[in-house]
Length: 317
Image (tube, rainbow, N blue to C red):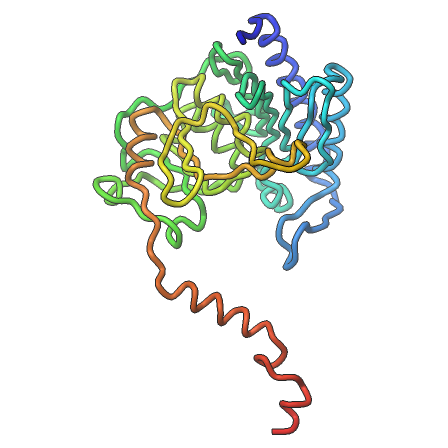
């Protein structure tokens, strides 16, 4: 079903306004004392009061304008609207660790899916190629822009050694390149915010980027920015599976038909212009780690009390 062009323009404009409003909230908190909690042990996956306030604002604004649309956000509960064709996918603060450490590389990501296909997107960034804050935005059938100024992906057909590339921080442990790219993958950067890196790929600052198993809220907006800027997003849904263009987010099967299927979406994503994206994706290799199962077993054993012995047994020796 073709979507009305005027409605797509409205969705884009709304997404821009919402992303900017959430960005204003983050800027107000940026140099203040933050309340921090962690979603996992070991002080990983921090969440701040700024994340929560940003998402609350986004949810309230979207629900007021489109009460029948569904909403999926990183921090809050899923909202299943009465009209399930449209889904807003939100990351209220992508790059929380950067934000906590006063590094201005973070983003607000607002993506709109129609039956799983990205149709409107906006990503707020506190700094840009204009040396100022702004919003990257796009809609299906329109250009990608930074505050109304059109941008394009990098045009070089092959990765250049002197141009910037974004790879996951763990790349050297979990991935390898083959062929020419192995010798010259580019000047590597890991900025700590997937949404920001997608926006920078769409605008040509990064010649390509790789994301290893991001969550849907990390990429729902950014892949549309790359596509409408003349680029391509490729998805490998699992190790050894074939690469294919990421045109639609396919939710994993769930028993209750909820939005939980979108929360379980995953895969490896490569973005760039079409030539580079295919060259990079087809050259990626996963190193075979023969000892990995043994190491995993040892880790499990070490978690047992005194390596599998009870305290009384150890004292009796």
